[in-house]
Image 1: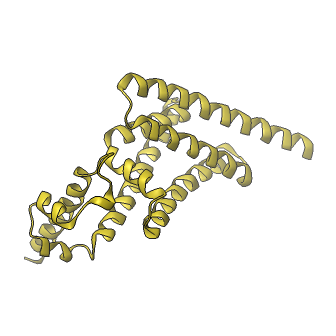
Image 2: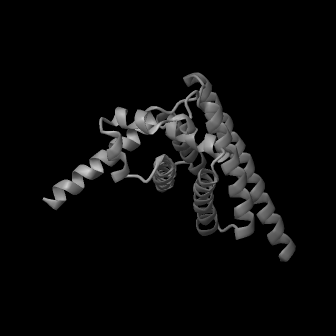
Image 3: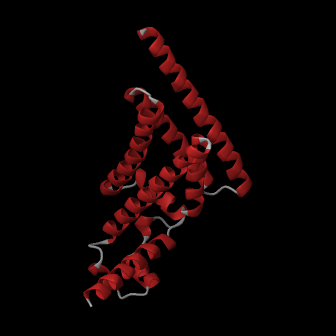
Length: 207
């Protein structure tokens, strides 16, 4: 019986999360959502909301956390394509762009709240970007033998490029998104080549 109640509670919680995402758009940011709108969309009474979240801010922070986690999991999967001879840069950028196309509401939330009025939201988005960057740093250090300092600089540049491209892709047509994808792959490759040359030059100086 307890298991049934727990499953129902989780189902309602997911319904609230999905309802909030459904209402996000370029014109309708998270700050403008109301508890009543979200609960109506989820099909529950407003008073039931508090069984799942303390307030709307906690719901929003949950969206940020889940969006960042979903993106990182997809990028981990894309990196596995290297074993089959795929390009890590193309696979990662393609996965990122597909995430933006399929999760427009979440990515828009990340962009809007990155510089929003809520300090909690800004810090939450910053943490997600830092997690994203840290995983790339670890990959560059562990798999490509970059010194950590150089890996951090390279990862920071790449993340800035792809997030900017993601923002441009939000309202782009399919053809424009394809062009943006190709441009982003080229830009990231330039950064990667520059980092590789810098590493080689540093090693030559040491030797």
